[in-house]
Image 1 (cartoon, rainbow, N blue to C red):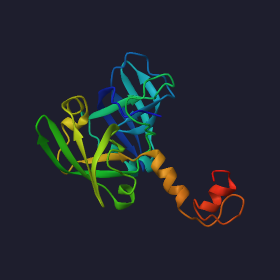
Image 2 (image 1 turned 30 degrees about the vertical axis):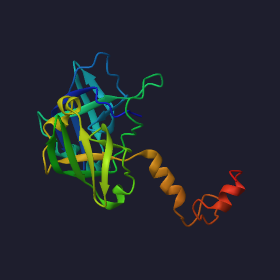
Image 3 (image 1 turned 60 degrees about the vertical axis):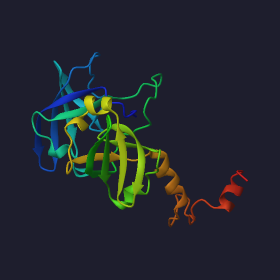
Length: 218
């Protein structure tokens, strides 16, 4: 679990494609030693450290992750947003981020507004349903507040600090970004949707007044 507050920028050392999978090697210095087996969010994607030595860290990237994210497009020298996993006693300065990407969005508009930057990102309609004004969204692992939504886009406002310390400094119109919507919204949506059968074989009808009554909520 992460917060969407980028700790530092790393640099892509190399990415080696092996069939449908890949090995990603990044260079980044952390104040504490990186341990093999720990999780680090790379551009918002939760990856497991498989090797670490002298500020160089290695990750295995599955075929599913390459399909769902923009990591497969990385080239040597490309910067990446990095965040180590949340400790239970840490401040939750952003929002709860799992590191599981919902879709790759595309920057449609990036324009300056006074000292800030307004950015519009195009997303599939099946993802936009989970975005609400003043809700949270993860963009390349950065926790941002949604200002405006549409059927296939959302807009965020970037303060100068966010632009300066993340990869959004070099992102431009047409670039792809990893999108993770709010976890709570996805669970609520799942509960409200009917589906054929549960583990007990009963037909599920979504969250109804009858279901709430039977479980003591009414």
